[in-house]
Image (cartoon, rainbow, N blue to C red; front, side):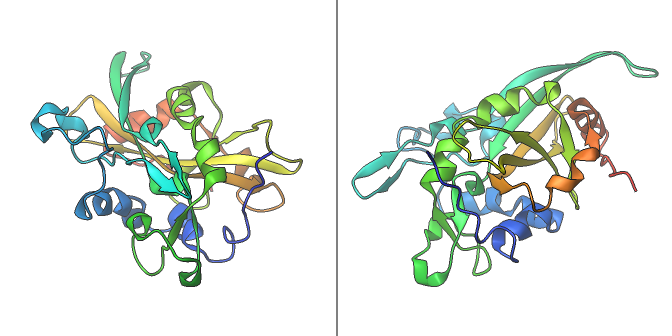
Length: 235
C-alpha cells in the first residue's frame, strides 16, 4: 500500500501556492522546465524540428534515477486528443484538440532545504520539490483521467483552477486522489491546453473537499477557453 505524504500540502507549502495561487505561477513550471534544459526524455533528444510544433514548449520529463532504480516518466509527456463539442444555441458543433501537459508537481512533493531538494524540479526558493515515489505511482493514472475529463465530475477550487477526484484502491479510508488542472486557449483557434498542475492524496477532512458541491462541465471550460474567457466559480 502506498502511504500518502500529506504533512506539507496544507500549511502554506509550495503545493498550496501552486493549487490556489495566482495564474502566473500556475504556468511557471512549463517555462522553467525549458530554461533549465528539461522537457526532454533520455530517448527524446532528437532535433526539435522533428517534433510537433504544438509540443515544443511543453515539458517532457526525463527518467528519474534514485538509489539504483530508474523511474520512467514518459507517461507524463505531452499528448493530444480530439473532443467533440456538441451543437448548442448560437454555436455549431466543433471538434477541438485537447493538448495535455503535466507539471512536476504530479510526481514530486514539497520539501525543506534540509531534505536535499531536486533542484531541477524546483522553480524557486519557495517551491522546493523532491521526487515522491507515492505521487509517481499514482501519476500513472493521470493520462487516462485527462482523456476522460468530459465524462467526469469537475469541481471549482477556491481560486482559478479546477479539480477532479479519484479513489484508487491503494488509498486508506478518509483519503482521495485530487487532481488539479486548468484549461487555457492557445494560438490556434480550435485547440486548448489542459495543464495538469498537481495531483496527490488528500485528506477529506481538509479543503478542497467541501467545494465539491460546485460542479462544472469540462466541455464548458473548453468552450470558454476557446473564447479567451474564464469559467467563473458560483458566488
